[in-house]
Image (cartoon, rainbow, N blue to C red; front, side, top):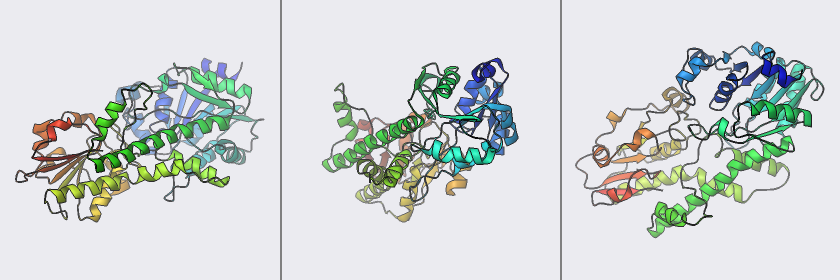
Length: 438
């Protein structure tokens, strides 16, 4: 009986190392079919899962209460599994170089608890070569085992889109790879248990790593182009969204929108690719150019707000400004690597301390990472300007009446920045509003 058969029969278990926005939904999906150990170093998070609470909002509390995943912060429990999936974040340092410490740390912990006959699959986004050249030596050193003899490795890039209830693990084709044909088939069959859309067998681990890192680099470049167009069209007095809607009537026009590019993928992955390219003597031109544009968008939005205040003769220093939304994307509690912080910090340079409201965000996380305390919507009144920064469902209900109530009634013109274009623009192209959007 092979490893796949043993896992399906319940004789062996699968483990998930890293139970965040990516790892936890994977663990829950597999637990519907097989025995799963869910491991994370964060004991507080583990206790929440054990209490039936989903802090990520990815699957919901009811699903967590009913799942059979064995949630644990005890690394020794990993010894009970033979198929391991590593799904930890891969951020960048302040100088935009890859920070591989999470995946290296996960490899050390797993290596210390690895048993003969295991298969280890990495899902973390990395540049080509990390799995075989960095992770494998750590696994071998910590376990005393030999890769290819005592254990096998594979790579299957995560494609989960946090906050997206349509494009889920089950509905997105899964790229899989293995160090040899036998491993590839085991990895493919395991993932086929839960991925209804099927799997794509990449020809090598490096090909699979490269496929993932270019997916987000491509999106980053396209969004950077939209952001650059937005800046150009503003100078021309043309509404960018109106231009894109017109251009989008052609069948082959790529429908991207301008915006803040944060999170753990699109704003990070390009740096992994360019880092490796530079190691090999090639200096990226297009990829890094797009990154520079997107990294500067928070500053551009803040400067646009300041210019708008000046246009309507409202003093900039100590202006009352509300920022609605702080997470890196809509309907997701994750504030890590949000670009809204760039708006907040830049406004601070002008003597403005914004009121920040985000009913969907992890308030404790934001306080810990940024030192920002969120306010409730009740605090948004007598404002000089309002920025709708994130397209949360909670903000979609705002109409003209609700928006009007946010402002100081004495202002002849109300400054409103609708970054995501949530509102009906024509309703605010009036004498009493200065409306701006990307």
